[in-house]
Image (tube, rainbow, N blue to C red; front, side, top):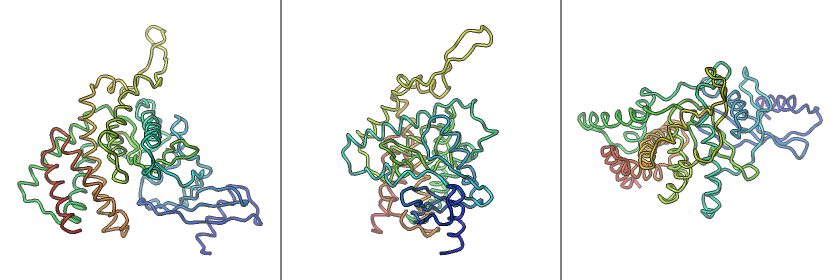
Length: 363
């Protein structure tokens, strides 16, 4: 057993208040693309916890524990943190098992859709948390989405996917015209009421524990556009959704403001009367008609898919995680679809089609 394993088991022993004679066994879990390692620890021959070790270089990893505590307080289900040693980058947390939303990809739509609706209801709870009530002094977050971050995402896509994976080089005027189109896309996405977003809300980051969804990998949570999360979940390259299924789920989310009951009563300081407080995000959804809602969804989905494809290229070619390359075919299909259904992304659609053709020639 390595020194690292000795250290992690000793930490778990202390957390669980176990003696030196109590048996602990450690099983490494699958690596994720975030500079973290995970182990499932079995103790007393019947109980399980998960040990996570993270480095401090990746800034968002340092925020995991504080964000988890906050999310539990606002009734967004996440794993309970049992102990956190920030100096060593150790976290012991609740074990949620092995079944995630992705695991149900081949189940009937009746069963899958129930899990998706439950996931969307939780996401809505996150999205409509009042921005002004967020405890920034206690819960650190990554910098919010901005025009600069959207520009970084599209450049990441061009460098690590279009160039590195598809071997496509744009000439100067093609690059300029595409940049103008994508800059306008960023402006449309940025022109929305900010909300808390998960940032990586996809099927492998939603565990199904006791038949209920539980969010994981939320360390990148920040303020941004809720449609980014919806695009991430409903245009997820890890699973296949038909257009009818996607629209059924999107409409379910769209209708949630009428039924969710999250409004709160507060005192009006000027009159002393009780008034209903509606979050700005919820008010924005209520004021958006269904056609505009779909348009905003397609735009944000295209932005998210550029980021995802860039990540697959980077992780697969530069970080040695070749398994991520397997998700590129579904990802590019989704980008073609979202850009084609969007009203103002013809150049991105054409580029996505060229990438698809290039990948077909290579296969």
